[in-house]
Image (tube, rainbow, N blue to C red; front, side, top):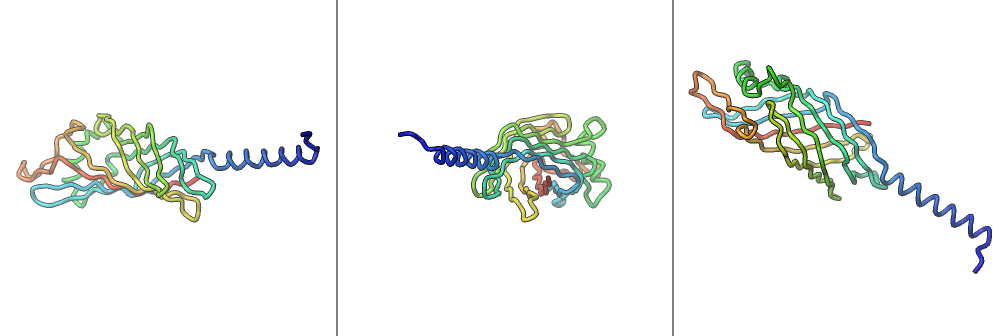
Length: 194
């Protein structure tokens, strides 16, 4: 059957629209956050539970949005936090924590994603490298991601970490009578913007 000129034009236009939609659906978009985050490190001690907090840090991400504007892919993500920006309510505790974190030599805590998957409900599962106190280890991370009305992306999650795994000695206070537990939980909440 011979295609008429009208049919050829119609077919070409349809093909062009499909290509544009596919490109739009899978466009990679770069996002950034600087000091627009909340990180809380929580732990235990023989006396009481404790928290250290910061809003300082930087993160870069490259994401893919689907046709509905939801997260569908994460091809790059990194974040870096100045270790001494973490603060508790006690200066002596901060000093001991910085000693455990070896901040004199290793000024930042960082995470870089090597692979990630995003489920339709916004759950993000990442594999990557976590660097703390001069030790870098493979670390899985689970978070939730949501595209907001202003097109920013909110990412929340938490990760349990063993200090011993990163060659850190859990801090102690008052001549060793108060000792912190080995495990800490890091909770993070950040907003990425174009």
